[in-house]
Image (cartoon, rainbow, N blue to C red; front, side):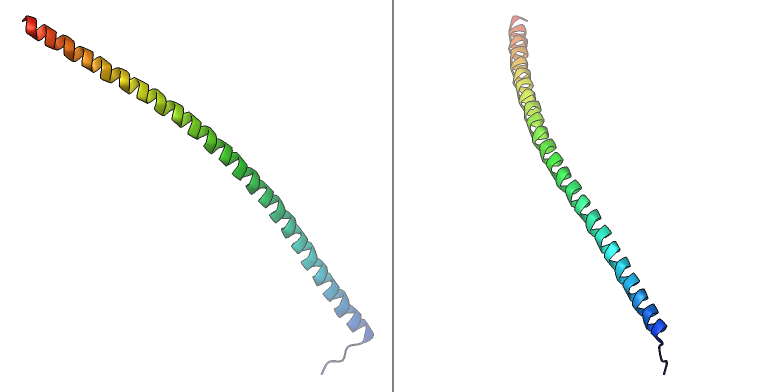
Length: 91
């Protein structure tokens, strides 16, 4: 069995205090990093929500414009058909 002298006990206590200090520092650093990461993710969520709303508005404008063009094309096709029918009757 090993007997510890007073200096041996002091060495063990200093080592344990050092290990606890390292653990506390690492825990604090990790907590700080996680806090910054959560803030960044929250900001990213807000940005994505704004982008999504903007994209929805833009897509709606595009779809409305496409509908207008579709209506114009259908009307144009009808007019061409009428003209072709009139041309066929004359011949």
